[in-house]
Image 1 (cartoon, rainbow, N blue to C red):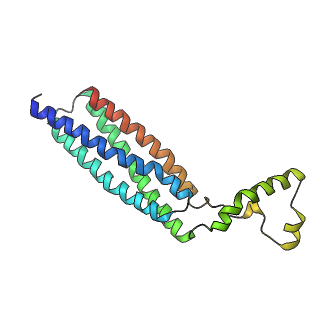
Image 2: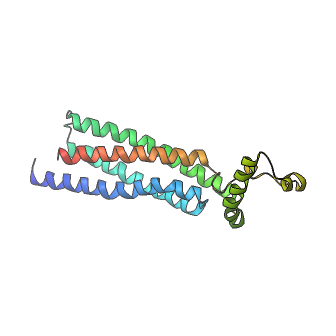
Image 3: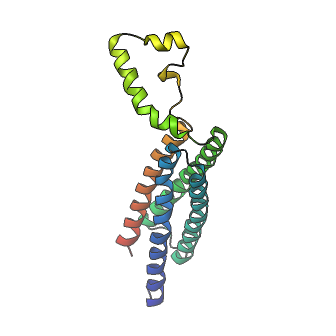
Length: 185
């Protein structure tokens, strides 16, 4: 390998690190902002995922060009296969981010009063459950029981869980690819 090829390979690895870092941070922090019902930040993280996802695709294509047709190496084939898997998973995460932002917009912001009263109400409900039933106040006033009220984080729970799980798998795949690239550089 010539000196210029080695420099290009080091730049390729460096750009991959500086692209995958923000991408991973954006995907892994999305569930927190879904839980806090912050649709603005979720949309921003979705846009960040789209931009850095395109950047990783460009880095992949640059890596293919850098390989110059020598794709028979096991570590290179494994890296490319893992990248394709991570890219498909990243598309699922991006779709779930969009869907979660839409659901958060439809649900509206969480009421500060409901969010502040939720821990106290949950404690009261737990105490009532130990006593064996609903309180007399809830029966007579017609209040909605605490268990039936939507909690502050119940919007887009499926998307939040899926994003959390898949982004962890994607981060692990990026780490394996990085180790393969650095080990064989």
